[in-house]
Length: 313
Image 1 (cartoon, rainbow, N blue to C red):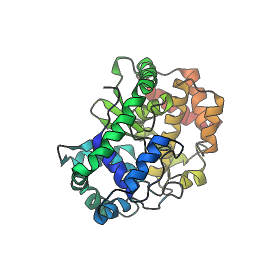
Image 2: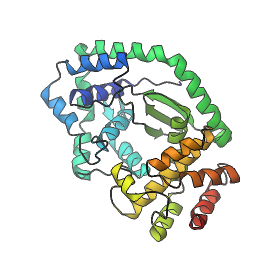
Image 3: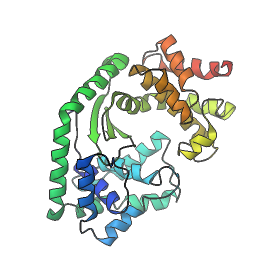
């Protein structure tokens, strides 16, 4: 299955839109029209309020971080009305990114209600919205399949026989956000469109995360060390504080961005675009990746070379 049109994901998007989220592409006529229908739907105030709690305001440029992404990812841990919350929270921990500004206990109590909230949308009144969404998705799958195939072929070139299963789950109401979930040997990219760099980016996150001990040790000794601009990382939500864990998360992000650009054959302008958003080390990492041409087998050695050669930049 190349494209997984997840009903739970649509229900979450519906709830977020009903509570005020408007990050969809307003130039997309079909999605804009569907969003307007959702806003006019008769959704209970309790459901709207539950989704409104996703708006933490922690990050100015994305007030729905991290809870908006959290419930999008959590959809994939709900099956037949049962929520494997422990597996879900374990995945969040593995990413090194999910820090809830209100607190872990409040977050768990809130997200534990997800199955009950999803069941609300099983009401027949909402099924025409889901049917329309499926129609839009189905019309776009032929174009998406070409993009997904390119990403999969590129990933196989790097991973070889160890390549994970790559699947795309459309979230047409999130034009500027990409999320992912790693379940067993499957990487699911969640975005409005499956561009090759985006899919490779999400597929590489678990690979770089395997080297977190090395990156964390480096971060404890050297801080950001020129890998990223602290102020911009705070602004965009990649750092929540000056802890070693936050710094390591940012450096991981720089590695993922650089390698995904190289593997997707993007040009120097694309590398520089990451610098503009504060990931200063992306061009350097990309240069080293091109020069060394690491494989999945010696990837840890590549990480060492980049980290401990970085002071020579």
